[in-house]
Length: 193
Image (cartoon, rainbow, N blue to C red; front, side):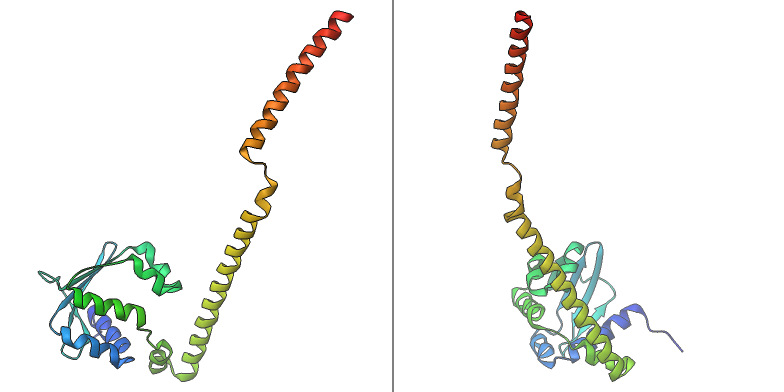
């Protein structure tokens, strides 16, 4: 049995993802024959859009891609937490109509991963994995929100317990003046004795 290559697996994975939302492939069909170059840090992937609107792996970079996408690796966690907000880190250059469609898909395309998993591991286990993923995301979102609230409360309420820099300077000046007054008092007492 011949093992499929990585490009073949990626193409099949993208095909399966896009197959969960036929509207997405319909939006890409007018761009049939055009190519995409995706760059994530030092890694690059290249795809062609076929007549059915699916992305097919391209083994070599196109001479002049129709659209180039750049994403910094540091923005990946943002895509998992809040994909819409993280789109600000995605830089597109090339065909503006194709860029608009890719941007639209990035904002609105949410594949049913539970459905995809059910084909590989069965409905029951896929449902449990999906439920676990949703609970984990919810927990992470809630924990992050509580942490932000806690820091905000500290900054607005507890931080007032610390003296302002001008108050610290005034206190230091008062301590210096008191120290000088004590020195003069000691000198007077020494003259009287």
